[in-house]
Amino acid sequence: CEHSSTAVVKKQHHGRQKQPSCAPIFGPLLIVLNSHWLIIQFWIAAGFLGPKASSKPQEKDARTMMASKKRNNPLMLGIMIGSIFGSITTFLVMNTAWTPTRSQTTDHRRGNSLVGTTKHDFHNMSGATNQSSFLEEVIPESLRSLYSQEQLQFPVTKSMLRQSRPIIGNNQRLHFFLKKLQKQQCTTVVFMGGSITRGHGAGGPSKAYPPLFVQWLNEQYPCLNNNNGTRGVHIGKRTTAQNSQTSFIGWPLDHYDEIDLVLLEFNVNDAFIPDLPHALEDKGWNEAMMEYKSGWYYEAILRRLLLLRKPDPVAIITFNADYNGDSWLNNTEQPRRNIPLNRKKLFRDNNEPMKIWLSSLYEIPVISASIWLLPLASKQGLNLQFSPNRNPYSTTSWHVENDSFHPRHRGHLVLALVLAYNIIEEEKIMLNDSQQVADIERDFSAEKSLLRDPVYLSPEEDDTYIRARRGGQDLIDFTDSGGEANWRGRIVANDGWTWMADNKDKDKFGIISDDKAGGQHFAVKITGGKHGIVEVSFVISYVNFGIAIAWLDDQPTNLHSDECKEEIHANLPVARGEHVTQRLIAVWDEHVSVPTVNILRHRLHEGDEATLHFCLTPHSYIRHGEGNKFKLLGVRVF
Image (cartoon, rainbow, N blue to C red; front, side, top):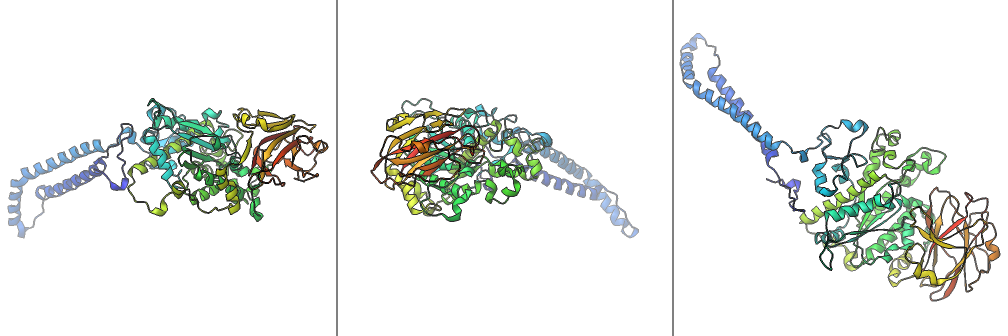
């Protein structure tokens, strides 16, 4: 027995097959029919056995009917007793078949099985503690203890997980990835994201959602090595913690030979893109909007990924893992926590609407935890949004202590569960969807490398930054931990700069100088590209960072040593000198450290060689903190 409306999946997955049952339909139906038959028998019996008033004119007929009743009493009693016995037997038999098993128990008030432990006032959700109903389908048995009630950050229902796919998108690339999994091919998954992807606040990179998802992938879809058929592994790679802008600048995917799936997690960090230096046209007042800067760089990344072949077209998922909790706090001393200011912003520093908007236009699937988590946190008012004792879904419960951006380790388990659930659901669709697809629905970017016209990029910007990349550009990348050999020979001068990683995890590399006196000089050789654009990337921060100056000439020596030792008392990008020096300002007011870029005003024509100079200026009273650091990330020539 099967309901077509329930779309029961009949695939066998690792030896398991779910069998549908007719009992939920016919159990209640037979009980009702037997009950009605019993009532009819009682009514008939009452008509033969019950007392009957009579009147004298009808006395003769009454005596005749009474005699008939006496003859039929044994027959009617037998029918009645048989009906009672049959009804009881049917009820017991069908109730046994109809009673849900332990794995089918649900919370009928919510209509969903619950995963995770209940807390505080959620302890009273009786009958909602059985999590096996869909965990068995999503999580392999070897990992279920990791996703048990005690491990997850809060109770997770199937309806929450169903809300985590706001944009279905074009699934052609994703199905190609799933077919590789079914063929037991080992795959490579790249996670491009910020500090959440790096595991900040979760206890380190090993406790973040990327390794958790790859662990699930290896257990759910074991793969085989191509060369000898032995057990292999799916590989997960993470780019350096950054936003769409710096991912666009450094483009770390050039370092990988094979990529099957890319997850983009920039929902929080893209609120901290300081400017749009890559614009080759006047964007008007839009250029100052955070949402426009975020949209420009995210579209550039999507367009590059859609044209990428490593060696096949890569599957792409926009993954909105978290939200900016600061914009909901009421602290007038900090701009990011000032509710009167934040409610006047578009989307309140939340980039999810922009990510959904662009992903829908480019038919990119979107998976989101924040799209259902933020409403659960805030639906009872701001007080409960920041009350971990009364609301387990609160912003304070979700994020680490004194932090509004980074989930705890148990929250990363929820993120991995969200990804796993959506992969399983998409696999069901792929295996059971028999609907025809119109030609217009096909993925032209995968089949023909055909892209829609850009939404934010101008034709010149698209040609420069997207299309021209396939011809290659001159890049010096100081962030690549294994790339020193590629640029060491291009250094023509170095006085007081060091290539190093200055973060706790020792994975964020750059060329760094830090001296209050200033004057440190560094120079590299570059060659002009097709468009003559020279792009310099560096880190900006709110404390202990300073200002450098840059210029182009044909000399290896520092012709501006006097200027390098002058204090700069204004954070303005003023150009000076015969060779047009340009200020690179690494000081800003936001309490985060993020990469940024400047485009040099001096153009370098295609094929021309020049020396690009940098020097650190002295510390001045306008700086925040006593430090005077400058961290150079790279140089790119278009």
